[in-house]
Amino acid sequence: MKFDVLQVLGMVVTVAGAQGAIRLLIDHGNAGLLGRLGAGFAGTLVCYLVATAIGVVLTGWAHDRAKAAGRRK
Image 1 (tube, one colour):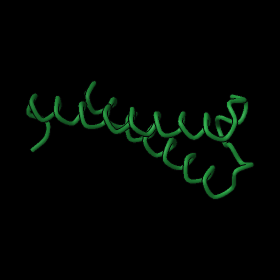
Image 2 (cartoon, rainbow, N blue to C red):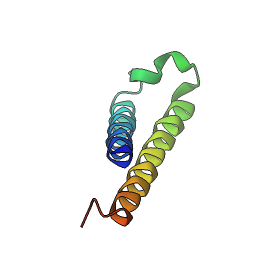
Image 3 (cartoon, rainbow, N blue to C red):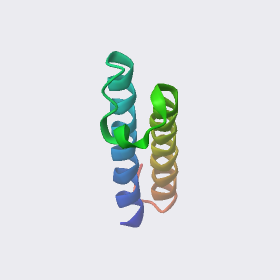
Image 4 (cartoon, rainbow, N blue to C red):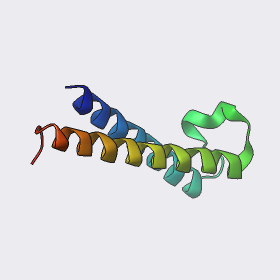
């Protein structure tokens, strides 16, 4: 059950990061969730891309651990 929750959390972080990065690339003035960060365009974009990468790694790790525990095929 723990790995299922972590996998869902990783997917949510992946989607939020990717959506924010795409939004920022299309409209440079719309920083979304990280608008108050104050890091400028490049810094905010890097934060969104790092969040996307963390989400992908977390999702993959949780999936692999659930598979090893016999919860996935």
